[in-house]
Every structure is written in C-alpha cells, then in structure tokens.
Length: 51
Figure 1 (cartoon, rainbow, N blue to C red):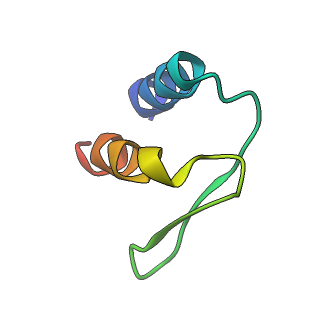
Figure 2: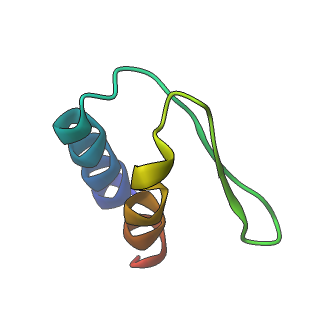
C-alpha cells in the first residue's frame, strides 16, 4: 500500500496537482475529483491496478 501511495503522490506532484480525491468503488470503478485532469485519469488507473 505504501508503494501505491508513493507512486500516486509522485504522479500528482509531477502533474502539479495540489489537492484531489480518487475513489475506488466496490465494483472496481475508479472515480476522480474535478481537481484531477481527465487527461491523467488513465495514468492514475494504471498505477492503481499495477499493484
């Protein structure tokens, strides 16, 4: 889990994202708050599901 958080944090830092939320539903669907640009959603999904 700590590796996942580090990778997500690094990706957010690199993108200049200061605040935002990511939700993972029981069905496996990932949702993002509006602070996270849609162009980066797939990159975050890739990190989340690579674990």
